Length: 236
Image (cartoon, rainbow, N blue to C red; front, top):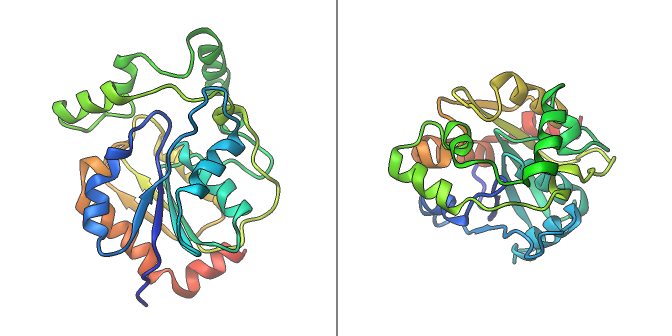
């Protein structure tokens, strides 16, 4: 089947809206919007969800959530259950109901991340961004990502999501050469999401920049072909 619903794109932590530019061009004429981050550095997780919802001018829409945007996307799907038609998580952190980004990380990574945020804030050093988030990108694009990277509110990482089950079609796109979230960790998050619809992208952490055509084929494939199998996975 073919789907024409608009799409709200939710970026990972620190990442600018322009990472979605080519995705939006390739998805046209489907309508798209990019969720902004809250202005306040002390924003709560709920403020991220509010900002995302306010950026969606449509009655009903699908969500594509990347990286830590998975925390926002799943919470948005809970809060706006009557409006969100489907959720695709892309190398995304998906906490179990009642958990947080940090509590979803394996030991000892969650303790290392928690300590780093207390000492140095939520913006990693430039070198860490290049080795992790920007791995796989050409040098000019990696430079742009590093230069545009901004710190996030601590509550994006510590805030706990709701406990209700998601009742909508869901899918997960795994990146095989990801140095930010390993494929094994991504598979754990796909399990948390409760989906049997999974696709693999042979990229690093930013497939929308590293291989935009393949990324958009994955997004469109989920939206257009989710059908009965994905619907049953979302309702499980």
